[in-house]
Length: 530
Image 1 (cartoon, rainbow, N blue to C red):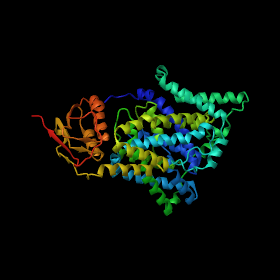
Image 2 (cartoon, rainbow, N blue to C red):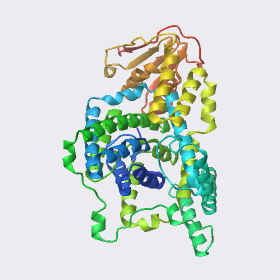
Image 3 (spheres, rainbow, N blue to C red):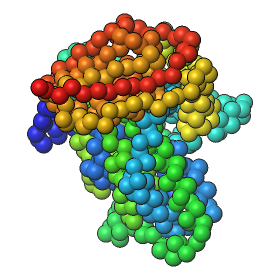
Image 4 (cartoon, rainbow, N blue to C red):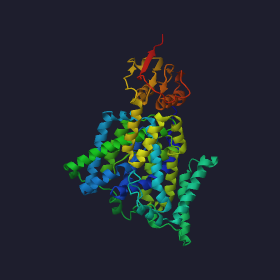
């Protein structure tokens, strides 16, 4: 594997860290407000997600912070418990439970999420991002970040009447200028190569400058204060001290605190595992995250965040996808975003409070489009109904309900199609250690579904550099897209980097849907050098 120096890693990932910072800042504030918590609690969670979780996790793309999927749980818990400092005890309990889940290796369940469901989740989140940011792009900033359902505000004529009645022409101009800059920056080659000047930063600066010109000229297009980023501005040492809320440890005597903590731990862990699987899909190098380590990192992060007055966290797809789209190559990017959050909140909140929410909405709309672009839908359509129907069902279900319910529906439909003709039978894996074999032969059976993904993934992950691997598909009629892409990534990327000689035998150019009537299994054998 190629090694990158610390300075090189910082230089290479600073632009992506800056973009994630710009995306994360308003989301942290908005989620805190939607959760009924102090505004700065969301920013504290973002800082901890960047610095603490970013340092411990081995995910190269994922970014952690306060999540919209937890807002309903947090809001209900704070309301029931009566005080935010008591609720912080629930965050501590959640962190401890996540640590335990990491040590008992519960992270392995993420291997059983099929790619069409993960891609459907990503596309759905892209659609949700666009739908939620359109009001802010028009200047309607009543609720910056709510739940992950488009029906939370009520899909009624009253809401649309309120939306269209609150349109700000100045915000629309800023949005259009920002989107134009982002598109130009992404398409003009020499601009795209200026790594230290990302298009998102240029768009944000342009938004600030435009609005300041509107103000100085006394134009009616000037964007009002309530439509700008709003951070607390400390005026004294006491103000700085008041930024941090300390938990009331008497809360541990309240049974409701323990129930809230367990609920947060379960939901946050599942969302994190889903987002980690999605983040690995967004990584151009297709590196595999240790999900058990990720659960431990999330547990430690939630402990630290709760002790200093921050919200509970998960790995978040919105920030992670912005990170990947901005060209992040390592976890240094998420650490940089945490550092920028800390520095800017403490030193230049006045400047940050000049940023129009409409220019940040433009950044997020482009992120949403890249997640839900039409090419993704065409890709799954071409793969056939066994891939397309679970994919599009996941998209619709996540948009119409929430992330967990939507993924559950998509997963159920995907399993239904796999199991309608047969049941999964256990595969045989040779007990001979991979370390003792100079040549490894992986013989695929007649059918290989996503249910075999975990076993193949583990085998490929454990293959050492300078090995010889033969993957034999001559007797295979069907290989799930998940498994096929994983084998392709192994052969085309990791094998080249680690000098692994790979021979692929009998693979077809494509595997279409068909009626499957045989159980799948994988046989791995080893041949020792004479």
